[in-house]
Amino acid sequence: MNCSGCNKVLNSAHRHLVCKQCRGKYHIECLNIKTEQYSALTSEFRAKWICPSCNNVTRRTRCNVNTPVRQSQVPGKDDSMDVSYNLENATASSPTYQRDVTAEVITMDKMSALLDQKLQAYLSDFKETFRKDLKVYVHDLVQAEMHANIQLLKDDFTTTTDFICDQQTSLKRDIENKAQLIKDLESSNVKLQSELNILSHRLASIEKMTRSQNLEIQAVPEGRGDNPIAMFQNLCKKINIKISDDKILACRRVAKLNPSSHRPRNILVSLVNPRLRDQVLSACHRYNKVHKNELLDTTHLGLAVEKQRIYVSEHLSPDCKALHAAARKAARERGYKYVWVRYGRIYIRKEDSAACIHVKNMDVLKRKIYF
Image (tube, rainbow, N blue to C red):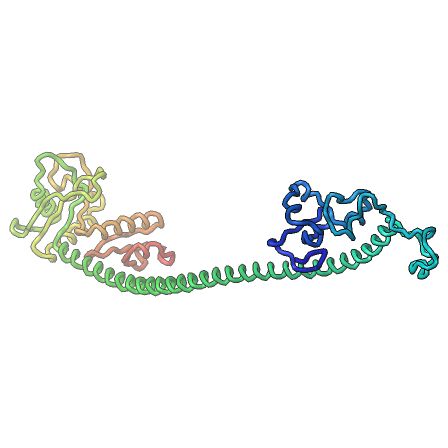
């Protein structure tokens, strides 16, 4: 920054004073102040010090008379502030008189007014220039700040979008891997389901084969001291079938599939071959067909209990028994007349002239075309 007096460079190393009004800075040398005088000035005086120019502009009647300034700037105590030329004391030989005999008297008020006029014009131009410069400066400052913030937001947005893209790519890759895994599992499931069906079919066939020589006598009341072999022999006599003891491999009661059922346990009879089993079943069927009013009951087994009908059937697997029970229920609901089992297969018929239907599984019972 430059000195307002000599317009030379002024920095903090130079001793100077600062004007309270215009904030202008002056070398102490320009103010004709010695170093000792400058050191003697109080901080309060320095804070309230006003430069000669501001003293004239504000039209103050007092000046810094105590400030040792140049003799050309500060008048003596006895000097008048009126710097007008006294025409009465001027002579015709005076150079000033010869230049302008009619010059007006110059007073401090006129000098102040002239200075105000000059400063007003200068300040008007200065304000306009300052306004334009300030506008440009603020515009550039705002633009630079906005550009920096926009660039920062752009960088953040770029970083965020890159992260999201990476995550999306990773997620897409994981989804594709999982989709392929699901596809493989579905294919494996179909294959396993097919193998399971084959194994289930084979197991059912094996169960039928192992039961091919067995028959069951159902609804026979249980009593203490029951003799299942004797009951079976009495049944054979009634249906006119002769079976020796050596052809009976086993004859016993078996556990219930549903322990909560109140039905008595079935009697399981194992014969030496399937042909003999089929002969017994056919004989029971013929007897019931001939004696419709006297179907096989507990009296035919030699039991001294209340007369109760009994049933002789093939020895079915648990799945086949469940399907047989569902077929009987569906037949009752839909008015079908016949339900029977032959060689482990379940059949139904609506009437004598209708064709029989092979019930392979539950899906057959749900088809409306049959029911």
